[in-house]
Image (cartoon, rainbow, N blue to C red):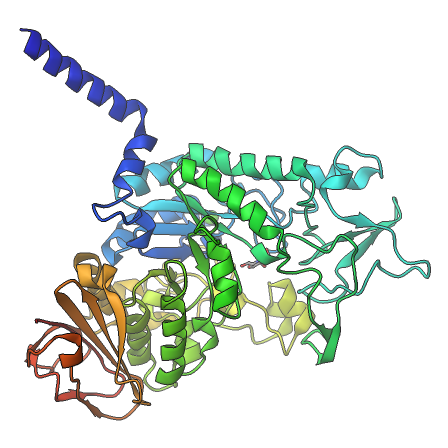
Length: 571
Ligand code: NOJ
Ligand code: CA
């Protein structure tokens, strides 16, 4: 009697806790038996919401559009989606100018739509990551409107205001990364405010504790709403030299005709790390991940973002891969070795909404699909967490504007023709071959390219040789294969200029990855005895070559041009 009472009351308590403590439950499941955090085994997928799927047919993508495609994402093998800013915004920088951090822009939907998206995503095991625009707000945010209203307003010191020089010039020589001076004069209060990006994106003053408190509260607010982390925008621009010293000039001019300079006094200031450490403490309370937009040049810089005690960003994006703009095994080897031996968990990215799509950057114009599979075969088989960019999985290409009057991105208008802006990499997702690529029944905000006819989800789902089906198979393998998830990275045949090869090794198991980065057939031979693998047999797990045998001898492996070959090797 007592026992059954105990059992039934225990199960009631357990069900009650499961109901009222979804966060605690999620956190518990977030770490696996070997201590890996959920984000270390997850595949992330960046969605530019304006361009993913338009549910209300106004030509602009929206949150309900994303919800309607969750099954597609699940089938693809995505575990977390990072949505670029969907908060209320005048859309000068398409959402990176936030006017209210705790709401959804009506063009994208409502908070209820967001809640539904989160619920439906979580139901499928997909987590939601939001974009946190920390460095600046919109000039229409109430904080800035008040700040600008008078020199003594409550929010004056929330932004960076300064007198000009005696000769009526801006306070110093700092330049906006989007062209021209980084200072704009407010004629009414006769002071300049600082904006590293557009003038409509005034920089917050992170030296003011009130700013830090308000911004930290924003993250808490979204965590309570169910988000699993943030991608932190433009992290290295948070602080500026308090003495506003001029940056040293460098020879030459940039694409806007401004002098080149070493941004010594307005970028990568050490104070940013204090903020990241504190932000991490809040994230840890919610089992959340922090991904950083950290344009690091080398491993020392990257390690600083992980933090001396791994207490800053779990996932700084180094972008060093995106700077290897050719299929060069020696260059990739160098970058992988560096990132793999850095202090934190590696993060790999090949495309995003600010850079030309990988399909164009690596494609040779003739074998683009094969090369798209090759790049997937590379960054999705490495130790670390990949962040995909929407459309990459179907081989979407850039569709750059042909005429200045068609450009939507302001930097394209300013820098035309040298800088065409970022419209080309932000075009609507290609769902089918129809005129608007199945994105919308209305004219899309950016034109879809002719490639929609061959490169779209519907067509590629029917073709076993498509880029999409290759991604699906590769991601499925990655999810099931412990070696691909956790195995150490061991470079092989390091002097081969054409073929990039490596072993992934986990306990007694190994996976061999071989990538022919050349347009000619290659023959490779592996001696795996130094790795304690004497078997002459490799079992094919995945390959782009349909004629490749199921079992091969690693000492004689023929490779077709741009072939991907992945095999398990027994001891
Ligand atoms: C980086 C974002 O990725 C980019 O799209 C934006 O324009 C700037 N930060 C400013 O927020
Ligand atoms: Ca819409």
